[in-house]
Picture 1 (spheres, rainbow, N blue to C red):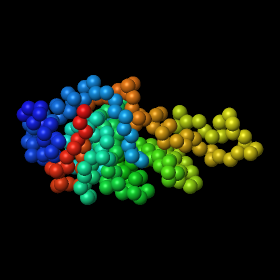
Picture 2: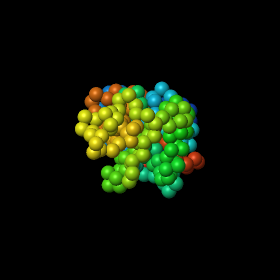
Picture 3: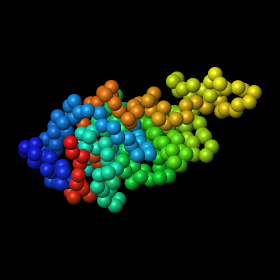
Length: 242
């Protein structure tokens, strides 16, 4: 199958018609196009997960994702702008970025908006992948959340909407609020385990900041998957071009 034929299949959403050989060629195409690909400046909308690159395969079962197709970083980074169908949103799994895979896009269709849904997803991801992280920054809504889970257990969590909540002991890279040079115990108050409050700061220490740059090591190709089975990509056109 020629390169332009594969491009046409991708653009028109006919990848569901591919056999095993066609799928291998599609993965080869994504790998070749990913080699030397320049960083793309696109951020996840609101929130995302991160899992280790060497064990990321477990995420598809953990999040019940379907019909994945191989794509480049450029083709998936703006997943929120790609066409979808009601109840079958697209989720993007990035190529490996400094040893990590980020997962974002139509996560509301996958885990919902509830706190239990989000935390349940972190637990499942950490069981399947060994470790999982979740980051959420909602400046308009005043929410800031970051979570680290290992083997199905929350190791560290910070969550703020109104009152901040701290779970677990501060990690080695965190500075406890009570140890800050500006903290005055006679006038200031802080929880004993209070540490780093910003999800955007935490992700840089824990995995990788989604605003990748020329120094970010990119490996392999990414995946676009669907939040519902038996739907397929037919008619869901318009992968990013250029």
